[in-house]
Length: 119
Length: 119
DNA sequence: CCGTATCCATATCGATACTG
DNA sequence: CAGTATCGATATGGATACGG
Image 1 (cartoon, chains in turn brown, orange, purple, blue):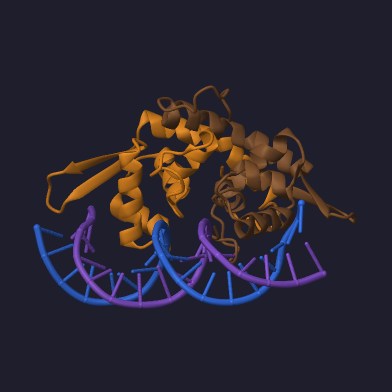
Image 2 (spheres, each protein chain N blue to C red):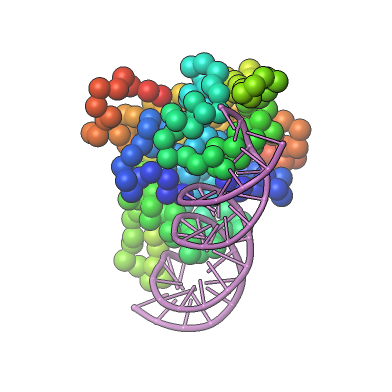
């Protein structure tokens, strides 16, 4: 999602934040990495439905925005670990009220059975 | 922005909330209506750059989601007023931390001169 | 004034195949 | 394992013109 970033013409802070979290899978990536660091393959499995291309592109954007830290290990087989930066953790905290709102006002009638409530 | 609404396959509350506020101009509409109710033409002028088609479509979606209330007055010339519902106001409150985050961490160096800080 | 209709541009996402 | 390359589908948003 690119809205106004290119022209640097944000109207307010929400505008700007929406550019960072606006991708289809980004909040799910953030939520997963908030638990613990993940490898590329782990993320792909947990976000069932995402393709490698989109996952890689989202991760690169989040990395560019300073939300996600990428660490590659020179091993065989190769291993790459993604984790949240401090900025990423603060973003997640700022997203919590919105997640709560969505859970209470949008979902509320078709919860994923057995799963504990999530932001 | 339609992500997972059609399939009703949200993974968490943020997912669901993003569907509601995901349109390019939606958060700006919410911010404007939080101040006071607006007429269609007012909104079009204040959101400089939005076209009538997109503005009307966003307003209809927000109305369908129960965020915005639309009231038409049978006058000549015609007058239509948009305002936030209680649900819309609660959504705006849930967006505030995100707006604050964006203002502090994304903007912070290119503020619109003279304007007071906004969520 | 408050929209709708039409046509079009492009962003975003996805499927598949392939590489270091 | 962790990606990139290529091609294509679709959705969203925009320009313009016109109607109630």
